[in-house]
Amino acid sequence: MLLTVDIGNTNITLGIFDGDNLVKTYRIIADNYISAKEYEHLLGSLLKNFHITDCVIGSVYEEINTKIKTVLDKILNLNSVLLENSMDFGISIPKSKESAGTDRIANAVSALKHNLPAIVVDIGTAVTFDVVSKEKEFIGGIIMPGVNVQLKSLHDYTSKLPVIEPKESELTIGNDTESCILSGVIRGIACATDGLITKCEEELGEKASIILTGGQCELISKYMSSHIDFIEPNLTLYGLKDIFKHIKSL
Image 1 (spheres, rainbow, N blue to C red):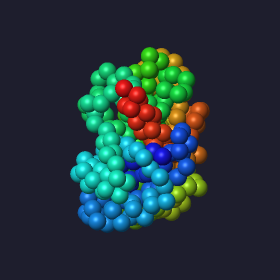
Image 2 (cartoon, rainbow, N blue to C red):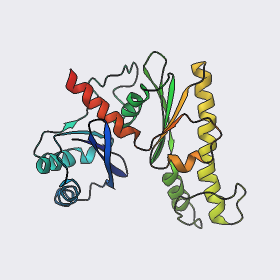
Image 3 (tube, rainbow, N blue to C red):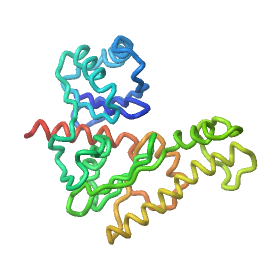
Image 4 (cartoon, helix red, strand yellow):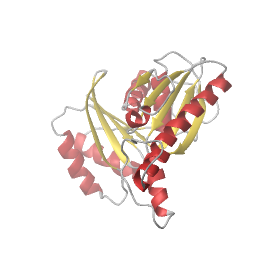
């Protein structure tokens, strides 16, 4: 079995593959203040019943890369692959390979299985757009604040606005503080996503396949007007699997 590990800014998402089938996922907190011993205990308990022979790690949280790799190598007794931007990912990245996060590259790799051009919208801590051209090139994208970042910022930078949890927005015109915030953030991100998809397609000169992923993609998709071709919250894990298979084939 292959373990795919997506280390994000807020969470570490684990995906266990049996061949091409994703059989189990876990999500744990990504935090540099959590000790290696604590991660070892947690990951050991989650993975003890699986026969994992390979592991690939993609990360945008550099401070804990070595810690997580060391822990996984110890409990699984293997040498996991920590992705670096200098590697061959199996997709052409003509302009921004050095700076693109491995999660975004994994999303772009997953898009190759769909009709091109394609736009992958990953709705997590940040909302990222990853655009793959008809020529199978990852040509760039967009980054903007995600749901939790916006909700937290409204509380942190005002004196009266409360902290609220992300959930469905029942009204566009809110009738209390909470419903106003939810409309602005949840519906606002949906409208921004719709508008940016339109602008991306204008620059591409044609319609694109629209693919949504990320922990809050299903929530935001309810308020979008764009045609969505595919929704897969774990798309990044599938992309990491495909990258690992490509690297092993070289």
